[in-house]
Image 1 (cartoon, rainbow, N blue to C red):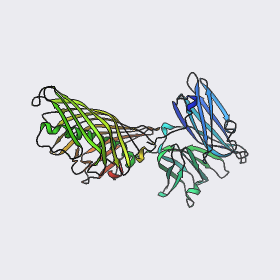
Image 2: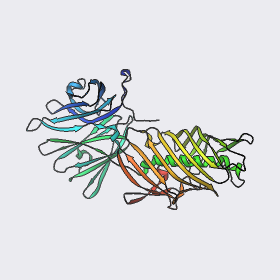
Image 3: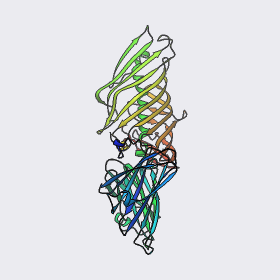
Image 4: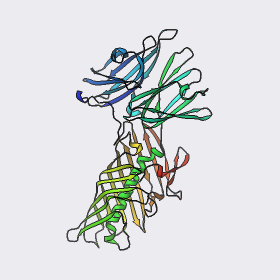
Length: 479
């Protein structure tokens, strides 16, 4: 699985507690001069590594120790003496402490004053994301945006410009892993002649800054902000959590229904095996997809799920069973992308009615596009529901948290008055019902609803901040 990786000096034993990036440092003799500053706000000794990387991949790493409550200032050309003068670079800062701030003063020397400085602060990686906003590129001068690919692998970024008249145009650029891209705005949009703002997005983790120059070529520097994406790929973790939780509930039902009712028809896939000891109240069931079989939604599942349930009393008088569901290399594949479920879930269910409660705390990992730079997905689920007449009803709470450098989690609440209704015979997604959702993305919070009652299996209506649009679920997380 692909994950966001940063250069780790394993031989030094540096344990990272904090990570930052300075998007752009310029040191060119007679043209640009940069001064780096590190502030340590904690106690004891801080071990810091600083890695400068140019767009062509040329790099240098320097180690530094800081004592409590100190400031360290150094000229960039002195610190990165191997790189010396030349094209600018990004600086990745890693430390075994979190109580650190960093900044850079980038000065233009080719001005009337001979020294026109601009100030920029280091960006904590927790505040980065796959979507950036550059708030202002003024028309009364010129701008040079810097985009840094924090992912290990190359990414294709989409740079979209917006003006007072709305969307203007977009272009794409490829950035190699852990490298910056910088260019004049005229190189991105040659015909743009008014002030604008930019949205930059990619299937990877990004940071950025914008240099803005006046007519005297004097610079100012401002960091790009993490934008809020919630829709399509932003829904991916939530859809993964919902799909997995619903499948667990359905799997329990398939594994036990034939014991307690004669009206339920088991699916051909997975194969279900049962073991029941009437003397010792215990049930063991396995749902086995083997090397792989297709679902109604076009996905392929392989591996198996084990159910271990205990009960009180006999089959006719026991009210509830309880136990857990465990996974054995359980994998879902769709068009070459795979996700794997790790962990287990607890369940309580009625033996005399179709009701159940599910409590899940699991991990998903995979190589679906949204996780190329993210890693594993933690799921926390508390659901209750019932299965009857081939339909499954769910209500409760689902939380999905992506293990990524920036903060990203999604909470969904399914109210009793509008529960999710599944009909696995015809659709892998809910055919009715809605979820109230709240997403936290790079410290930003956005709330809304996802309504599955569109009448179409593969669509739902996403409403955020009072604005609604239809989304194609088959283009989000593939079940």
